[in-house]
Length: 231
Ligand code: SAM
Image (cartoon, rainbow, N blue to C red):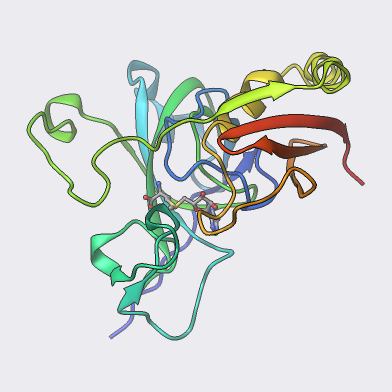
């Protein structure tokens, strides 16, 4: 038996590639985007009342991780990429129907557009449904999770002075909290846990329309090297 679903909208996100996106929502409050609704949901009626809601659940498609063959076990990056777990015990992107879910902050509501932040979504992500976060039902005070009990540890992020100036210039041009975005995302330490890079190894990722490059001058510390326009 199969069912068909179609997106109610698509996310325009600060994240242009998968690398360096936080592993869950809320970890980078400066991660912003716009959910652009498609017809017939681009009418004001579809979002009427949402202005009374601070956060929404987004159900979306991991459109850049869709696979034909279902996996029963996955190796979540959170566990270092070497330990496998049942797919239903994890929030890994490789899923039977490619469906993800994130609670995001709703900053502004317009007919056809939701301004969202604290996102962990790639640019172009198709959204299947939007539901209001209901604190009394969705926040479970005594919930436990032995696999992912706490938010990941943060690492220190320092900047070359030139890189910080570049980021501040781009932040002004974009009208976005770019310095905070880079700080918050890199503090999550995007590198795969099994890599132990020396200071000569550089990493990079695109945020909005800029390429950010960084390295690890010592274990547990990131230094931002440059923030340049993406090609
Ligand atoms: N909060 C969601 C959940 O639990 O279903 C997503 C968790 S998943 C571990 C988060 C990662 O998904 C991000 O770090 C990013 O690399 C990846 N991602 C985000 N949007 C994606 C998309 N549209 N297609 C494929 N991967 C995506």
